Structure formats: C-alpha cells, structure tokens
Length: 108
Image (cartoon, rainbow, N blue to C red; front, side, top):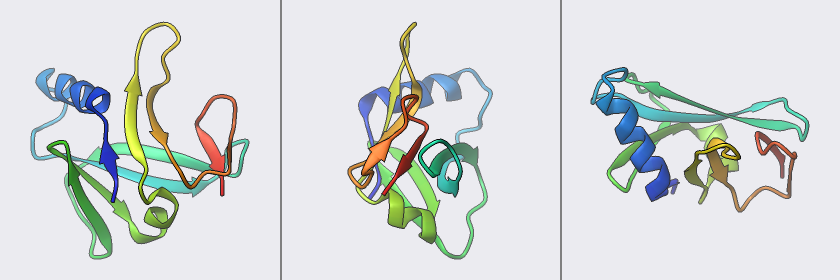
C-alpha cells in the first residue's frame, strides 16, 4: 500500500483547484537510479495507466506506481511540507536504510 498524508492531500487539492491539473489525473510515483544515496523518487501527475501499474487510493487520492518501484515504496507515505524550510512533496519511506541530506534520494 502507498499512503497519502493530509498535508499532501491538501496541496494536491490546491493544485487541482488552480486549474493546472484536471480532476481525472492521478499521482504517479516511481523510483529511479541516481541521487547521492543511489535511488531517487519521481512524482508527477498522469492520466494514463500501464498494464503492470499498481494502483492505490488513500485519503481520496489515487496513487499509481510501476511494480519495480512499488518494491521500494511499499508502505511509504507521500507528505508535503511548505514554508521557508519546507521540502515540498517528500516520502516517508520505512524501507530506506539511509537518505541524503536533501531527502530526495535514498538507499535500501
């Protein structure tokens, strides 16, 4: 399962209300090689699913990921932190053995 914190849900709703993203778009998350710790998170809005996608809905937000990425993201929570010291969208990932200082990459 992938989870969505209230903070992320509120920010996603704000983005949708701005008219930038249509209501039928969902959140697509993935993991790629790269970053200081070895693996990096990717997040985008998408409206096309693929045959091997894993689809979750939490806190009224639809989150989609490919199977390979799900192995790294299982039981992670998408969160949002704003303000001067905010990170923007980020993952609280119980599978990460270590993360980099900026929080954008991790290792298992």
